[in-house]
Image (cartoon, rainbow, N blue to C red; front, top):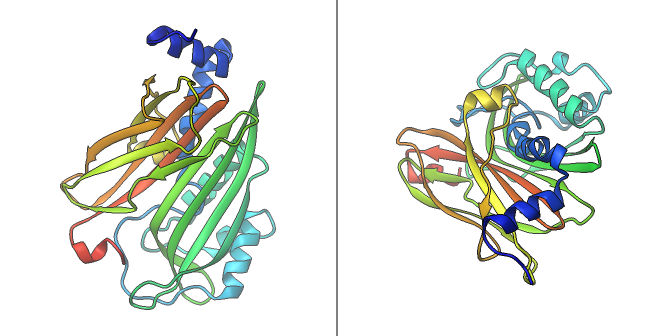
Length: 273
């Protein structure tokens, strides 16, 4: 018979994560939130003025440089939301955490005013003792270019998933890409498959900008979850900007770390640029 309460959660964490790795595993799963800021370029919140986007050739060169086949810094110039030195530092830090990380850049859907966007995908893995962590991160970016280099960027959408264990536990991340200032909104991360009596635990944290800049991760306090996932109602700041949430779910078959960046805007027409 399954035990209930805190003792069951403690048993679940010990079963999913060996005791000597429990702390590092929780922090590694939470790293999904901090590392999301390193999946492409430096983060920015406000939409820039209309500017030319990068050519397909420049995007191809940028993808190659992220994957170690070219000089990344030579393709970047300082501009709105973009510091080439910081991009290089974040890129190196992510590779130190996920040595086999690979970047893929592709043309994304255009904005309402016709400006093109860029979709970025990053896949990588890392070994921590007996555990293997797999990172899947995605961004939608609005990039500016002077024709030769990227000289500005805005992050429109960003999400990262970090999984451990042999099973690829499917989850649904029901968190909006953008909200209004002061708005209360739902933050739900749900296991897609039935739990079949399994006990699950989870925790959530709001990542500060300094944690994102340093690629640091918070300590997450875990609690028993009901209904097959984590369900929260949160409130956006009163000023425009962004919030980045880190969620950790613990399942008998492994860990799932989720991060999601939420743009906070002042005008309703900015919710869908």
